[in-house]
Length: 273
Figure 1 (cartoon, rainbow, N blue to C red):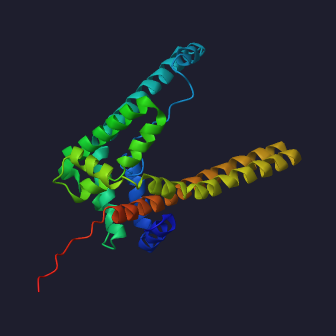
Figure 2 (tube, rainbow, N blue to C red; figure 1 turned 60 degrees about the vertical axis):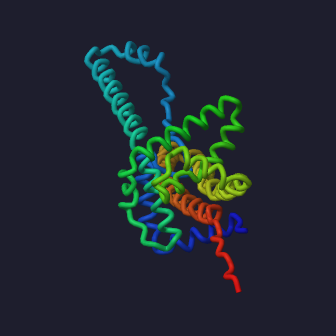
Figure 3 (cartoon, rainbow, N blue to C red; figure 1 turned 90 degrees about the vertical axis):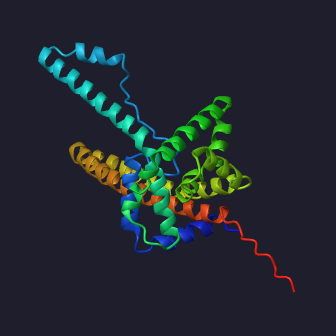
């Protein structure tokens, strides 16, 4: 039986000389809501609540400025709404395509960026997969958060199953995922948890940046503020690239995990003497 370290090593071996195409594909898949590890698209809400917006607009004396800001907010809201609708519609087949990309990567086939869009011919299956898994997880989460998390891991292999077996219905793929994850949910959780150290390492530089900025501000407020802004921008770029690489690595390890738990030995009867 393989452990987290084994799946991670398989992923690293598969990613050799493939990091560029893998991270690019992961980035586009993320934009389209098609990552396999996450089961839903998280929309970050603004810190300004809707009740405070009218107060902000009314506090602006110029009517023209108020109208421009209001128009901008309406247009921005419509863009976000259309993006969310588009993601809801297309993320299912994109998830299937991204699962196929990572399976090709792990199987040492040639992974292609176009794999991401290769499952649109099974659009209905992908859409139903996303809708049903989201619905089931939401219903289980109504009981308490723990059942929802457990079911998330139960359904985790559904995209891979459906990508390899397009003749199955979404419900059949979900059922098969539940079956193969029986006794394997904790192993997958441990695999995901093993990446937490990388995320902590990504967070460490911000502490150094704050300390360095405070030190410079003690010497010169202007110099300290300027250095803090520049270093923060560089850190955000580092955080973006680092998170992208870690998630790409984790997606490949996830596919390696699927390859083991989905393996069923073929029974070959002995020939009679």
